[in-house]
Image (cartoon, rainbow, N blue to C red; front, side):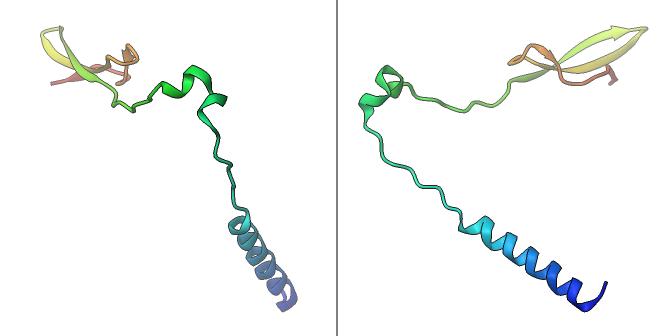
Amino acid sequence: MNKLGKMALVFTFALMTCASFSTGAFAEAASGSEYGAASSVSISVMAEQTEYKYRLYSGRRQKRLWSATRECWIDPYWIDC
């Protein structure tokens, strides 16, 4: 790549970087009446509840991770203990 091509590449990268930082988001404060009853609802983030399930298979004890939150298996296979 020649010197002019490198300079054009650097200039394009610098321009894209500056453009991505210069676009700010501005929000207007809204009154509670615009949202009605939904404004009184609080949202809390909760961790997923998991537990190991155990079984005896061919005389071997095995375990598998179960998601109690989503009610599905997390581990794809049974693991020997």
